[in-house]
Length: 386
Image (cartoon, rainbow, N blue to C red; front, side, top):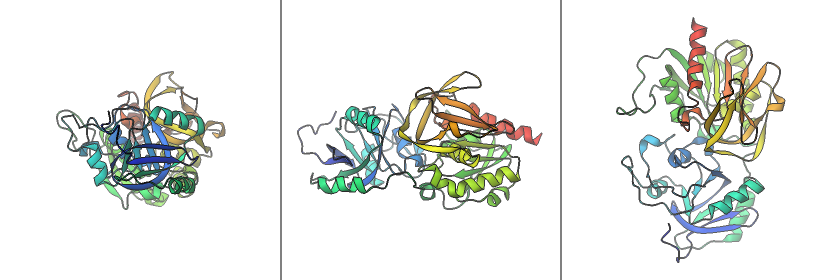
């Protein structure tokens, strides 16, 4: 619980509609504008803050105990936090976990990200659900001096995520090789020494744990930037192509990603597997459309039904856009749907091993409910080589 109950607020969150939430700042000082979303996960705040899919967003955590396990280098999904800021119910407590190497508030300060505690996150979450993801300005000033009119004006001036290509901002600058596998006791992370399949992964904002899952499934992974062409991909003679997660409007990223995917599908018969934004990119390349959701799906407890087996997976999700299943063309089948709202969560081509899912099978919410997707990708590559 905050020990600042009788102190002057040192942070505030201003919504574009003029609503203002006051609280107590931690992490970096200054101001930032972004779209506001909420995440219902009870764990994984460090992975969430470093997930490139959160570029351009401030995250409200509905679970109150944020910061209690500290942070450590092993849990980063990319080198630095990508989310613009965080909103929590209670100020982060002192870390109490054997893996912690730093405090959340200090970690955020070092990396230029703002946090605000002491906020009624339940009320804020209800507002997001009812009104859609709002544009906000988040400010932290230790002296508690805020120009509210200017902050509301800044929130209203934020362009939003529609039409915004953020993949170019979070993708790698150049290609690189990845061979680190998933964490396992007691070794921790270990390298892949006997890869069976050569995979090219397109980085739209790839999480490290996705690459680890590919390596653990027997893949020798070469990561290429988001702007890679079909010629760049096929020049590496891959056994399979992976399309990663990422932020922003899929239609905007699709301007260069769709021609690449279509080129790969036309010029080769390699298996293709996509996750999150990669799922949306594949759908667009196959002729479907994407739509902006009211408040999106962000959490680690989302039930998804596998239509073909009838099984239900507990999944981790983070997306504000979705594939419109009504626009799927002939030859493309819907494979998974959300049991929350019926939105599309997976597709596959009916005549070749090309498939994708909206959720994050690498995030271990089940904890192993969805790892089979990486194995399916590996099996498809093995079948092609046979």
